[in-house]
Amino acid sequence: MTHTLIYPVNATHNAAGHLEIDGCDMVDLVAEHGTPLMVYEEKTLRDQCRRFMAAFRERTDDFEVIYASKAFCTIAVCQLIAEEGLSIDVSGGGELYTALAAGIEPERIFLHGNNKTPRELTYALDERVGYVVVDSFDEIGLLESMAAERDRRQKVLLRITPGVEAHTHHYIQTGQLDSKFGFGLAEGHAGEAIRRTLAAPHLDLVGLHAHIGSQIFEIEGFRTAISVLVDLLKEARDRDGFECRYLNIGGGLGIRYTGEDTPMSIEEYVAGKVEGVRQEMERVGLPMPRVLVEPGRSVVAKAGVTAYRVGNIKEVPGIRTYVSVDGGMSDNMRPMLYGAVYEAMIANRAEDPADTTVTVAGKHCESSDILVKDALIARPQVGDILVTPVTGAYFFSMASNYNGNPRAAVLLVRDGVARVIVERESYADMVAEQRPLHG
Figure 1 (cartoon, rainbow, N blue to C red):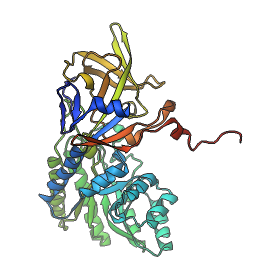
Figure 2: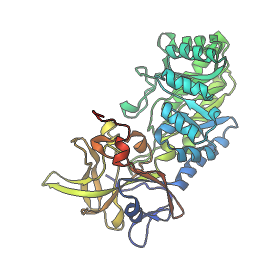
Figure 3: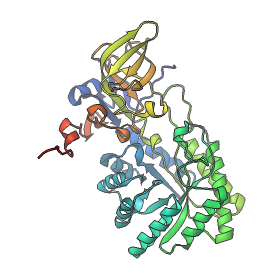
Figure 4: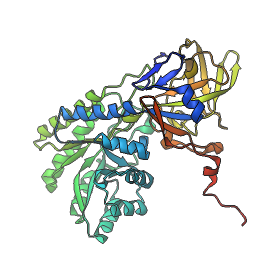
């Protein structure tokens, strides 16, 4: 494996030989806050947001960048994202609650989900959420009846599965024909969904949505999906008079987790999508709609690192050396869920040569609890601080209490100052909602 670690923008090795992030020594942070510890660099977060906004402004006046909050959803991060001009998409009631608690204007919120519950839809309607991305025929009927009860007209987009298979892990493909998400083109389902929604008096169909997957490195799949969507729009315009105001072409921009990854840049991604929509709409003679995208991972992942304390070191002669840390699948499920690959380093000896190949193992009672296979790091010692970079996306979101492990604290650092944005969970927190058998 190529040993090229991807850090937040303002990471360096300081005079003490420690990893430092924007003036905050990781060794000092761990001494004060413990491990596992998630650390986000604020400037990197803001820079990623600004790059998306600037790339769009160079190419169109009518756009919306919507942060996919499932990647990392906390009050502080939602506020930061909104300060940079992004809207928010949420995929459940808890994410919606977090966005509202952060003070996000409801009209800037998009509600997703392939099986939104009546409770979630009630919550969204009562809070006057801006947009609901409708995912099924059942939802069209349910949302229409609920909006009618409130004598309101709810703006909606229809999620379309365009039949495009992205070149990524099959667990994070979402645009292929065989998908639990959205309306497929087969047997005219997408067209029928447009007709039914247009006929619903309390639903305002403003556009279409499609998301073909995550961690995608090439533009071709996105361009193919855009072409399919525009053909559908042309058909719906000619048949039903549907005027598409918003075309949401999802997220999916891949990022570098290791030195071997070669994703396109934010600028290339935005240019490909905007020009793709423009060319395809011109091809069929339709006016340019507002272009929407939903980046999540590509906004937050690079900004985050996770620190662990090294515990046991076990050498299996001729096979591998296991380095066990005090976290694992309860704070990073991605390697076990779909084989996500990371790199690692020793933060307290950042200048030592990375000359030892190890397998970084978690502390949970599962053989599959492996964080990094074949990590090239400095020769490890018990008590070292081991860091995995590019962990800003999906760590906090997917965290659990498996084996009774409290969730990690989360810090936001800037100019040498670290602020706690999520307190470390305690054992008492874990059982606070439990009730005894007797009494």
